[in-house]
Length: 323
Image (cartoon, rainbow, N blue to C red):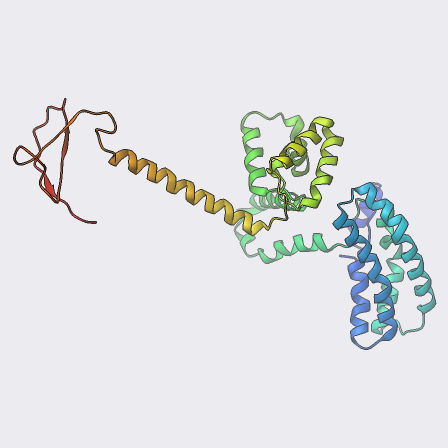
């Protein structure tokens, strides 16, 4: 993923920039250090603080602008120190050796590796995107039955929307349900982009299934997109605990939904059974008990009930059978 792909020229021609991946840069030094190279271990130690800054930003729930300011203040000095160390070590190891490959890769990718400092929206690594690609690889045998090119294109579109929803901590199933309902209700074609997961999250905060620390970013994004009303809506949902107050595991969330569905089905079944088997007198119906002889019903027998206004012939009681 970090080598020059053919689409890089297209990205540059459109005015875009292609950042590098610090995980790939670090991995080569780790491999050399595991082989016993002490210079490579120095490189690993110099790269480690860069990841520490990114983790601190994530835990703090920084917005894109806050993340950029943190990187300029804390990461840029680390990069300057790493660049000075790289210039000093270049040429000290054979290019084909593990250390030489690590130094060469870091030097060639340097311009791309430092792009993330000036843009808070750019991630320092490419790990998340590669994890999304891995899902496609694991399911490639399933894509053999996607109904030709048209079905394959539709499947790719659906998977892209699901991956986008997951990356924004949006419940994919709830998002699809809400989008489908809006389309059926006549959503205008000119506003289809407003149905993308990130924009749906801004207008429907209850779709959020991420961690509590990310709610602050959601509130800020809602306020920037929809003014104070969006922020107040998010805050009210937080106060009413519609938004999660603690980190939620997606598997636990699905299991909880299934348990609630089962409990609801049991309650509906019990309600239906109680209505069918309820005493007619309790339901307010006038009934008479049919027995063999005047007096009390036979002990241990099932008493058959006939409505007083019914014209059907009286029925004899039958023996109870335990199911």
